Image (cartoon, rainbow, N blue to C red):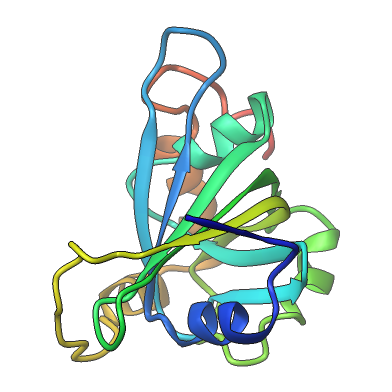
Length: 186
């Protein structure tokens, strides 16, 4: 493993070329579920500086990341090379969720010029990175990238803003550990 001063050069090129990344968060204390989520879709992850990254967070089945960030801010992002030379890159940091109902959301959204239609986005996860590392990735399998799935975008296109707000209340109001997420925000 090698530590880096920041996200630049070949590391930046590597992460910007990856079609998929993983997000890990956990609640404080010994109780609660650790969360690990795969993320993707071209244009939804941006490097904003040597120590700052962000990604668009779309409606989905769970809101653990948002709940955990509200509680303690801890987050790790991991990228794996599934094609080409082996490599694993991790960003450890402190994050915050900026929900689409927050006035800052519109300003942050401008930082994603290559993102698909953002209609289904429920927040932007903004991360201050304090540790950057990479390691070999020798055991990560080689896999072929066929393209982004459009199911989530098609799902959200069929819903109005009111439908999505109701979805957040009904399906994303609380984490699996009962922590409030969108229930208190809308």
